Image (tube, rainbow, N blue to C red):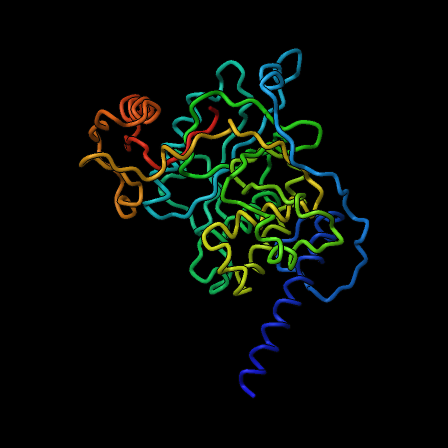
Length: 354
């Protein structure tokens, strides 16, 4: 009896979650953003709601070189979500330092910057970094997966903040900007980095709970997360509430939670973007990663997660011979040119704008 009731409860929970997501798609398309959790008691017909155009395209090198020629600048606002933990804070301070370095350089379309702090309270860096304070999810909803607060924080920021720019770059604390960034989005398409480990086709059976077959091919779900992504502000205002609800629903579904693990929120954004018909240019040169992810040569090692309670010290040692030149170059860039309180070499942090 108890087992049967448990299975029935799980089924009802999944049905409830899907209804919640579907309802959210409709209200986010036709009404202002809602800061409360929507009532799922609604039925709708959405068979022809979105286009079935395959969004998977690439930006050519020629297109890259012509992005700024004879065009008016289309500024984007850079938004970074963060908790108030030491681990996130020192990364944000470094990220903002490099943002300011390149903001007004030639070929930059970088507008304003906001750290979206989802701790629910101000911290001592409010005057150093432009900050919007968002409330965290209600207790227990994130189930210890703090990243689940990111889409909810974006919903609040988009609703309450006065954002001058028409485009948004969603970034993360561990992103380092290394070149002026142009606005790579075009003609209603977002611009995003394709992650090799986001595999919609492989997980189609799981994703169909949230992206039903009447929405079209699973290839409409791009292999992206929410970051780095440049997208029109109006599009993100539609996507964000759905992204929040899909994330929560995925976390509440044991099969989906197990399948996606720490990248669950990334899949949720990809699904939400597809549900709203927002296609993305998959720009592989948007970010560099791989060689800058967890490395060990000889006795030298730098792991950002070693500094979860305290910021990295000044004058960290340089990597030894044999390390990729991109790592050596970036060590010099980050360690010796940054005069903020925290000076570091990145060996897991991503680089944006390559």
